[in-house]
View 1 (tube, rainbow, N blue to C red):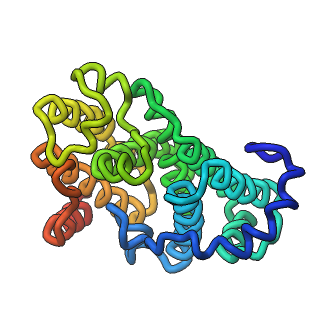
View 2 (view 1 turned 45 degrees about the vertical axis):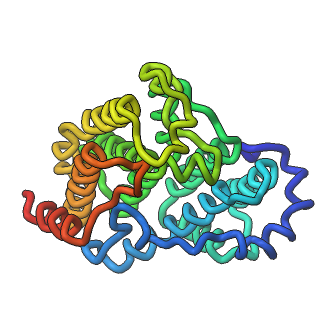
Length: 295
């Protein structure tokens, strides 16, 4: 049974979804992300399978973030994806078909794919986050499956509990960093707010601050508290990541960890309401070599 609704709805929407979905895509790719998506450090086969998973996630994310689709339309499409994955159904969607085909060699990919869809359903429903733990729960589905998918793809076995925990913390941190980077864009374009209501209340703010061209002192304090919480997630993460046996994945995750820490520093010192805060080419090179040399 599919997780998002009644199966009998599928036949009514199958044709329109398969024929019309291409024009709903944003055109974004892994080069638009904060972090490398299966870089040259990974083997060719691992890059291929991880990028298949990425493009599936990108496709579903584009649906959830589409500005003109109504919430019920988004949910119907995401439900269609979930039903196809749950039952290994062939569709006319090449990305979905390729993802399903990969489950034969990586069975856990089915669980991770469906968990991602749970997060995108939350986005489609414009879920509200009252407290910090609500946001962490969202990240459990929106971010953590990605790291676990890659870990399983390289067939890590030893110290897997510690590796998963470190990966979850890193992925959650990256997701929240992205929420801070895009807080104004998400609010203006999607009417979506990931910052927990409890933090707005703590600093005597409301979500309308996200429409402003620059941060107030209270919003700066709110932002710093979020980043401090992210840094707590990252504290000691390298110990878990260092348990990864694959040197290729170990180096890649350490590079990503450096990227996350660098973004935290930039976000603390700069105003995300003035402009999007992102790494420069020099920042990326620094993070790369620091990750490569750490051993």
